[in-house]
Length: 247
Image (cartoon, rainbow, N blue to C red; front, side, top):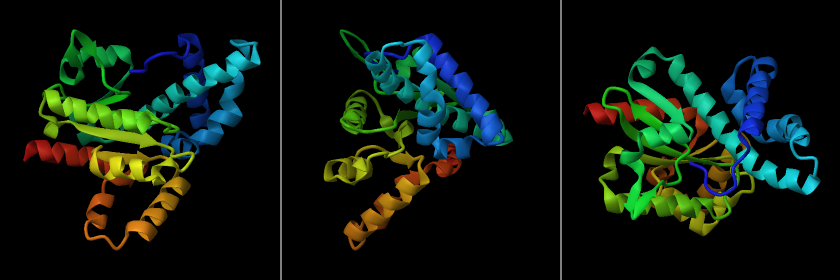
């Protein structure tokens, strides 16, 4: 659920339509390939859409920061949704949801109550269809700044209010500016959030190489590094979630 400034509904809908059209025409319906190239796709082919809504350059640039983030959430959602829709077993057992209405429908499982209902940083929910239970909360960000720290904060706060062993908190990012290499972010990735998925293949390879070079000799390195994955492993991740619930 996005806080603060939000992308105008009509702008976001136009961006979503443009994104889906590009996936069909340029990527032959392959949502994974489109997601791998999200940054260049968004900047080169979709950013110009905002001209019709924001004649002022400064306003347009400010709006794009938020709208691009919302579009990234949608791109991640469409990729996961497409996986589920084309896998009979997952389709029978999992629902993928995004948007404020979807989050509100499951708010009792994810909110923190303190004078009022406080939603964590939740962009996408993965739901066990059989029990209607949230089994994963995904937070999607193109760039980090303080946002990974925010995700870590919500992870800790949620753990104070409920048993989080059945709900995984997942961070999804392009790692556009190589921010996952800082010590603070590395600690959060490996020791706080449950899993991190990177959607840019080059950034993923570079990050793993940097981690291996700096930390590869540590005893627990390989075990901890399993928490950092490329986005094409998310199908296996969903199967893993289901297996754990069935055991």
